[in-house]
Length: 443
Image (cartoon, rainbow, N blue to C red):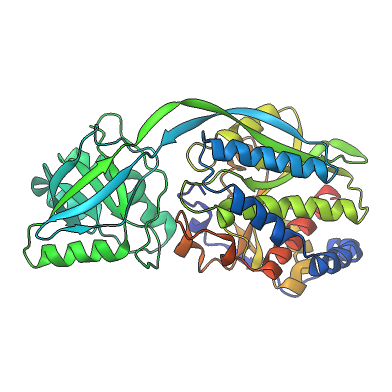
């Protein structure tokens, strides 16, 4: 998932728990059928498990991603869908071999992962003493000490949007003061010696230095050692490098609208993932829930007035090329709504909505249809990353909100696996996505 998260910055939240307007009544019979269907469904969880078990680590540019897309396309066709794809050239960063060890005042190997987009250590180990800081402000105050050091950002997790800036901008800020590498405490509220990867960036006016993540526990260890006056030296090795952009594709299926086929409600998620874990939460789950919602509508024999489309966007994690390609290649179509699921498919709580007028009012009208699954919250926000290029073109966007308390425990780690998800909660997400897509397609 590409963040800094925008929607967490908005303060306006409308709770609609009992309101049932004319729009809700109009769709209630269809929603009741969808609820019964999703509660009886036992096919989604095994489908997602099969995919993520066999096609993990779907980093953009990798063979794993493209073989995974082949599997998705074949599975969709076997289900009777007419599948099409959209080409997109995607960034192609390779991790290579990497390691981190403490060499002074003791010898100790440390859990480590490079951050996506980082440069490597030029084919040889990099050894330097450590400077641990708790903020960019502290780094500035201690800038004289940073020269020649490995800067370690020991920043506690507050929100993803606030804390991720140290992952993304940390290398350049450390380089500004002459550091030779930067390490960030993994961005998450909970750790069991787990490292979290994710995208980082460089300021092109400053020297590019290697950047990676260490565990919460090791960041705290380094801080304690520094506070005791111990001189800590680390040895870092990274083979990370950029390769030429590689071909990939978005995957699309749809049910054509009966009356307004050129007006589109698109829903989906991103099918790429980082190269740690299987990407079951981030974001194969969002893709498969959207696919299942369209399958539900089809199997129930429901025909939308407008086209309902599912898109599996490629390359959200380190480039957003799939979302941009989709917006560019469909710019002559009228999109009524862009709908995304990219916060894990845990128990749904409602939706965000970018609009402040009629689209939001309609969402507030129909949201009571989701009362059976306790998902009746509407939050004013800009939606997900993959629909952001549509938002820039003036398309209203919504994103599924879920009980995401555990999401950042496993985000961008080896722990992002299917066992963190519950079948009943995934089915509730199918219901939520399906109802919203169905209502807006018939608005």
